Length: 559
Image (cartoon, rainbow, N blue to C red):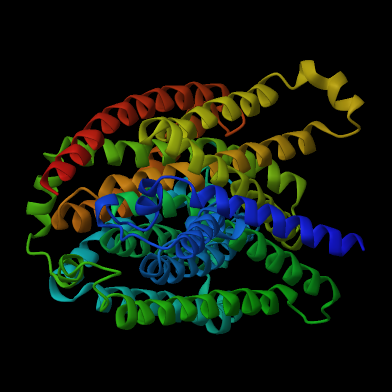
């Protein structure tokens, strides 16, 4: 009976609503159907009531939850484009997280090595490798299309990492000049003890090559190839909506890759092999190779299904992606040096690299002291990556609102501000740890573990703000530029700028190590350098915001 009464009440309410609409003026109905009032035909009362009920249903549907959800979804043409782009970013970041964790385990826990090797690696191996690759990339850009360059470079990375796990690492003892380097280190006078770190690069040279290739995956595949391709097929308005969301899927990849690294670390504990790490390395690089193959498959799909659809990608963008650049290396360098826009972009990237390197190396020195075993170190890094992904998911959601409500300029200032605050806390803990001993004891931990945890939190917050805000800001800034600046400017800024920033931080650390004797003793001076670098970063971000706003206004006027 209650159901019948409810049904009757609903019917009477609907009928009364329809009669009310039937008595309403004609103009609202005309607007609802896209017609002018004078064009509306005279209708019988029954027909008028029927149309009134249809209009009421249409009006109610607009406010329903399904209609609201449908309105928020991208149009089919945009969805066809952004879905494979987001999936590509997911698998690229999945592979990069595994490589980033693995490269640190290899070089920090290698025989005769430690965290002190990282500044020398970044300066004397990574930076020359990045410069050489930029020259090589410019040559490739002049000879081949973007599709050929993308496919060839990603395939090369996949081949190297597979070869390293299955051929190079199992034969590392025969390839490394361990005995010769040990003899040199033993003959060094005490005044030259600082040379033991660069000699460790020679002792473990295959690990150094792996470290460089892993760094290049981040600079080349993530920054140059993927974002270069995304910028060519995406408009600025689309980028503001979707670039922060790309990071949502990418940081789910951080969580899953961290779990995968921890899973592999767990397998090592139960392994009976003579070298459990060798088996784990094969599994880790197998995951990297599989992710790389999926990226290539998605890229080919976009070339065949998306780039050929004018509703997804304008023909002008397709033509631009197939255009080979014509300027040589010297001409490109002169052109980029004369552009304040590119210089400010490079300043942002270099300052980030220097800042994160200064803090990260000090943290990794504490990390090795807490986890000297490669298995424990790798497992901690896996948990660190998963936490980074989870925090970045939250930051991505906040980042989208920051872009929408405050604009590009405010979003660009979040990362340096975050690094300033968290860096100050981390260095304060190291510098004033003695006065905090009662607090450390009350927490039931040791000063070393507290430094590891606080350093991990600092790195997680810094990296999450980079992934959610700094990277989207940087990539949006390329969109208003012409084809030459996008291609070679991006190569110079991303492939050289990032290693140059890290190498600049490394040179500071090297100078401090040779001056005061150790990395720990140089901590107060490194903290001061960090704050100066962040000040330069903030100034460049404000300058670039002015130029970006002007470029967008000019592009809008031309459109």
